[in-house]
Length: 483
Image (cartoon, rainbow, N blue to C red):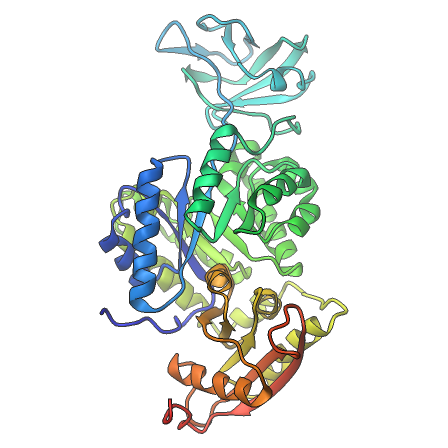
């Protein structure tokens, strides 16, 4: 058996996408040992058989090292595309007219098919249309419901089946296509821990997905549409976590608008105690290069300073030439940032006001105790994970040892800032609670003789949502002698 990994010396988590470059049992283990905490399966690519093999490899690694590992299945969402052209490509010139319609014939420099009546019927004069990841920008002049005539604002070469983005309109389109529904069924059958929902425009999209998931996995809403920003708090309320999908946001928004929105989304998620992932193009140059640019390193560091729960590798680990080096670099950046003496002040720039509940009051008290008294860890007993989320929301200075009898809960907190989960039998009385907290802290290298622990739990034991007890204890160092 390979050596186990104890708590990493950092709080932020690293989420890595699996693909051709990393989809083997050997590479998955190497990436985990290089610093990856959780794995993403991009359902836009790959067959179900390949994804199932990756799940099997991750679960085998989990068993081998004795640590829960989170798996996230990322649904593709609707892909809106134009039709085909008679020529391999056509040139759209600035100031020219270009029509999009429902006609089933090859396009040219004056028109092309847009087989999405829901877009054509929604657009109004003045609205923008973006083609090919925003490289071409059109502005609607006239519309009759079956076609739109546009002026080319930013032209260029365009070819078959390029993507269409409509940044200023909430489209009457479900976030879940037929493909997504099949992928969701498959992912739930594979017992994944998180489902990422793409193309979220409104809270109703999240509610629909949550109904279909039925509690079998946690739900992460990807914020990639400007419409979602307008109803961010409502979307957060219905989600278990969110992702700042900067690549897609950057298509529909001006580049300079994305950084402040990233900070807004991270802050809003932290205030509501929702884990937040910052994703896409973080170490983009490492797809082909063994080292990142200094600007990319700074970008990753900024997300960590803002208090993101997790940072994500996309193409860097899925199809890149240097997946292990990319994972190692994420780990190194995170370690450096969190060892910065100014990190604590920066990460607490976002104020998280406790709700008027006992659990929130105890979470805030634990944070203050850890800041006041030398403490090695906060130990929290939880069955659903809600206590762990409340604790992590405070961004305490010490690791969060999450003890739970529920393996699904242990895996899901794999995206949670500072959380180190252990699956263990529930306790039945106060003495057992304290004794087990001490043993687990020692066993997992989160304390030593003389260390203090903050222990939080709920009485009666085993009752979800009943966190009402906080106790500070000191380790003697010999708690494992009889176990």
